[in-house]
Amino acid sequence: MKKIYFFILFFIFVLVVVYPVSAENKLVNIEKAEVDQYGLALFDPLFINQQKLEQLMDNLDKQLYKEPQNATISDNDKIIDGKPGLAIDREKFQINFRERFYNSEDEKLKVPMRKVYPRVDRSLLEEIRGKELGNYVTYYKENNKERSHNISLAATAINNYVLFPGETFSFNQVVGKRTKEKGYKRAPVIVRGELAEDIGGGICQVSSTLFNAVNLKGIQIVERYTHSREVPYVPPGKDATVSWWGPDFVFKNMYNQPILIRAFSKNGKINIRIYSSESATYFKGNTT
Image (cartoon, one colour):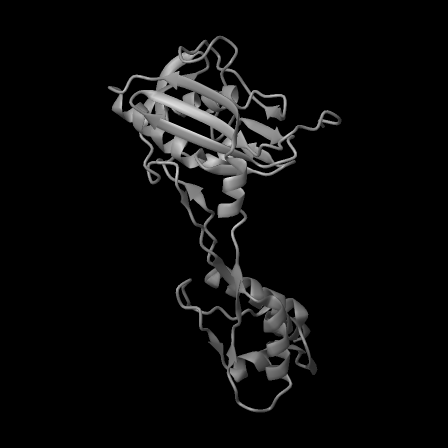
């Protein structure tokens, strides 16, 4: 009997209400009866169970959060303004929740939202696109449609990326997993020194071009691996192989200003340029 009682008590303790809402539906109301369920326990309902309340806010945030969009630079060099996102206002929500919990009136609780502003706005882009720090170009055969397509997808993924001082850039994390669902196709790859075909073949040329573009005094290479055989698009030893389940290409921004990556893939040519502010200088001290 005791085991059954403690199981019921535990279930009530961790209960979290799930609301079927979308990111577009920002007005969510919680019934007073549901608010009352967040008492600490059956034997002491006068106090709010903070753990359950935190879980409720986490759940609402997952359903209602709208990611902000960073400002970007178009192919014709014009700045496109970013857009703010939305998240629940946790501070206001807790205040309103407590008011409803300790109020006997049958009044619904509206979930308050707050704007989430993008890290990269117009003014920042205007500041950090003024000075070119690095530039590298490699070439590929356009008639290999699948490989050319993969190269274009990967170049687009890293284009307009802004890396702030002290932060690290991971090629795998930024580009993401190369899958059919994301549009990647089967193309030639090098596996243990042998040519083969796999989803996403060709993107190593993008990572290798990026490596040569960021091979600067103000950039610390954290992780880089070369192919098991020479590749034709960069000089020997100047490549950077990547694989979702294996090698990654990672570097750290040691400049005192953010850096901007501009990557273009067109007409059989990959061009990656690195920009920053006119006042950009690198830390000559500790690079660990």
